[in-house]
Length: 328
Length: 244
Image (cartoon, rainbow over all chains, first blue to last red; front, side, top):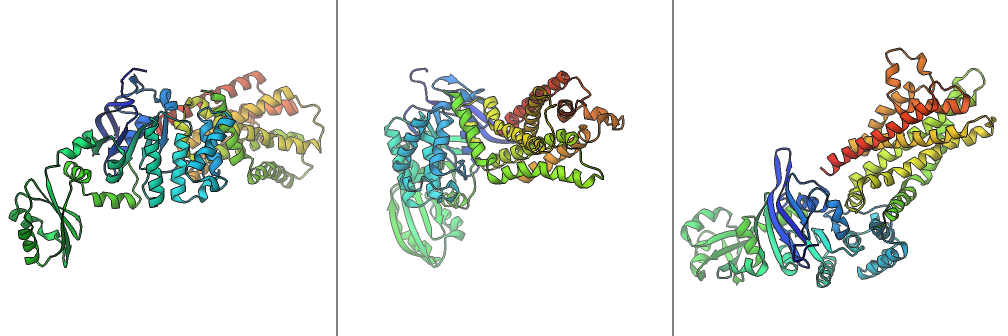
């Protein structure tokens, strides 16, 4: 393996399905030991990119390198290095938790004693020891997710691909998974993570790439991404008695320096490069029958960066995902 | 990487999960019994079990292997657990051999259910076992690969059954098991020689009743050829459709 080479490198990676370009010449490199976040809305090309990187789809164009070696035409050669946790479970519903893990370990050539010991250790680590003998089909969604992650790491891969690991599961399980990812990172595992939870990316990732319509529109460290908007002033207004839905035109005319976004029906955000004078804004809204129950200054976050770069409303993205929309 | 561990465990899992389940085992027993009874009911004279044996054996293999493999692979592909196998560092050729080995074993086992039943009513001492055993194995392998070809061509489990029948029933009537190929209309005869079961059935007839028409080694070579072609075409389709 080449020294200092990225653990994963995509160069002009492209995937076309007939006339649709799902992934459009994306470039990125993932450094060994880092957590690399891949953020984007449904249909942006996140899962297709993972499929190409892991060997489940063939690229239409571009190159894939692992530790400096070109494996574009034969990802199989490096599959022993990777663990993959897809967005939907791919374990065996008719096998129990323990047998699922042992079977997955056997696919990587692990011997019986080793895979059984490792399966027991992972079941204990994920708090699944009590349900080890239960059929996978009878697991709760959170338990299924944890077992899928355990199956993805049972052979101790150098690189772990995680596609939306905490989508649709309970808060406690999500927290446990995030802690486990932090532990894996500490142990030196390279993690490629797709998520639509900005807070999760903010907490876990060293670097982030935003993907929209198959294109990587921005890639940087968390610090650099946030630095761009650190000087911005953001005020968040909680509204009552109406929404600002119909006021977008008049707001822009009256406050030309401000950029407005509706977080949801009752929450409006204004962003400017200068300090915000609240009184005229509140008066403007109240004159039009919209009450303001709370106004607060907020620190610009990664969420703001995402919205600014992609122009996508996060609330809409979350709702789409939680409705059960699958990644692309 | 110890590939044999992966191969063995895929085979073992499939045997435990699919093939050795009670409903499938009972299928293996009832299917040949049902065919024999059908001939018994139809026949106006005493049933010649010996002449029926090759046909019932071949049908048991054909239906057992194609049904099971087409359904299990389609089921795993639809449930996405097949993706887990594709993500494992196992060459596709070995992976598909592991997935098909269970069906070959199941089909071979099915073939011997009518043999065991027949052993109670007829004398099997004249059977040429060195011809019969490889014939059973090759029919099982070619039928399994036909099931694989079907599985790769469909996306729903019910489609797998329907599409399997599209091949199976014409094969039953064209392969010479129940009507000799020589008795078929001249136009249909070339079709008979384009299906693997014709060669398998001919060896079985020869091994059990000495009534085969083709040289045994020609039939073995033809069966091996069909196995190779069906396997390669299926692999090509998997690469094209599932790793597209």
